[in-house]
Image (cartoon, rainbow over all chains, first blue to last red; front, side, top):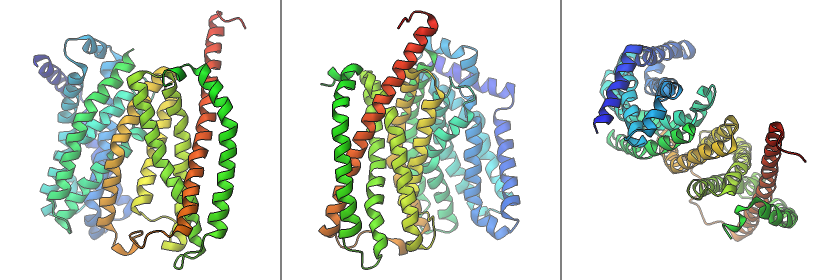
Length: 222
Length: 244
């Protein structure tokens, strides 16, 4: 277990010191959210109505762009080979790396979300539900995305391919994330039921994804 | 039987014999099913003649899902047993499944225009077939991007299984999303059970699609095996070890 925490700490430290991790994702989040009103118009009522959806879609894209950071650097410099031959099972290595990635990019995005909600005239009573759903949903986005990132490790310029592989898998997270926020704003279903399903999706993806991602990494190391 | 056909040469022999018969059966079933569906079956009292597009649309949508299940099964066989033909089967099925999904989407749009007054409505079924189509696209792209066939096959098998676990979740979430957003005015089905005058040609059409899939998958797998053989010959030739 010690090596698990060591990998976790190492990845967090690397992301903090290298820069360009969480900060870049939040910057991208901000850019997308500020560009959308320029596209749909400055009508505050309209923006307030579609704000949960816009914020979630922007979040999805931000997470998507950060995905290649999970494994790619370690794959290129050979660290992943070492980790794969080490005593810690590759599945646990993958979990540690996903967790570190979530702490350094997922969490900052969730914290930034309400601030960007202000830009979109999001009703203040939706701030807390928005953060809660994003807190529950971003791990799932990371887990599912890690599968795509691991599968495309050996592919040159895999960025476009990742989005094609991963975005369809994000559909349920998006639907229930936006659904839960909208449940608070307009009803009719209570906040609880879509939120519970969102948590369930996160848990299921937490089970599937480390196994699938570890298998994908192993085949790329051969 | 399972192990016996692990040898591609045996598969080539068997499929070569089967293919003409399956193709012939496809033509016959389509001729019967289409004639029955388009000319004999009664028009719907509400939807009129447009209901006939159902005979193309419903089996296509059904097959799009079925083919993904087939890919998932082949992926599991490929990962667990390392069966050399499972990869070939999964790879060959993907474009066929994508074509079925595309056909279902197009006919759904054509059907939707007179029914709903718009080419595209975010109806739950159309939307989930659209997501399924996107999954096929990603799956095929992954096959294309990784050059080495064995490695591509293993990556695609992982993706195929992950996608198969996700499809029911996606379907459920799209249904949930749809009931939340749309008023209950467009509820289809739930009416009286399908009358046999429509059900029989529909079943024949489903049979025709199944046989069509069998014919296409056999032909595609043969082509894929030959393609790999050519690739190996070229590689051997480039190394100078191949004389023939």
